[in-house]
Image (cartoon, rainbow, N blue to C red; front, side, top):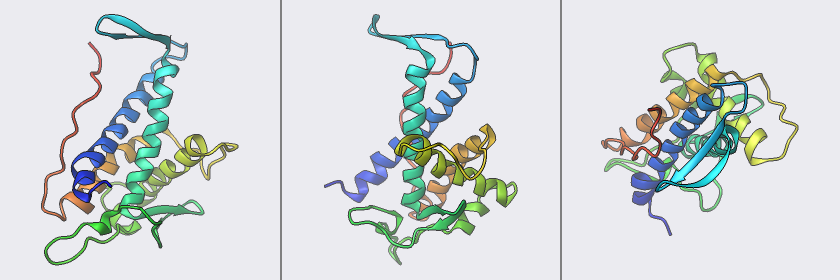
Length: 191
């Protein structure tokens, strides 16, 4: 059984790192309209060769899943294209409410508190977070027709990927009086 401390110190940083990787892969795959070749070397030996999508697509897809999982951990979900607070947890879920200060347990994030963290328009923030749920569900977690409530843009993805770590900090680590651990960088960008 994974302890709440292990989740705090290891698994949440791991998921935050997946969001950083999602951002990297999203930008990488969009660098060129033509499929670029990628060669993966391990200790100087070729282990994999293919196009950018063969490497970037799994990074993007798992990034969406981890981003959605962190939003759900905080207590957020989507109904009919709008951000809502999760009403009931499933058995075995570990969530922000499993953590506490000396005074009281932490509470779920509300849509209002999540959206208030964004300095821009509320609708833009809500759209960004809704996009994570819809893209994770429609493109990665289920086989669907891919139709979402809106046409999500690169801007929505960027806002969500920058905002989720802020929400995790604000609703978990800061409330516990702790500094969010920094996950080791798994990717080195560029030359």
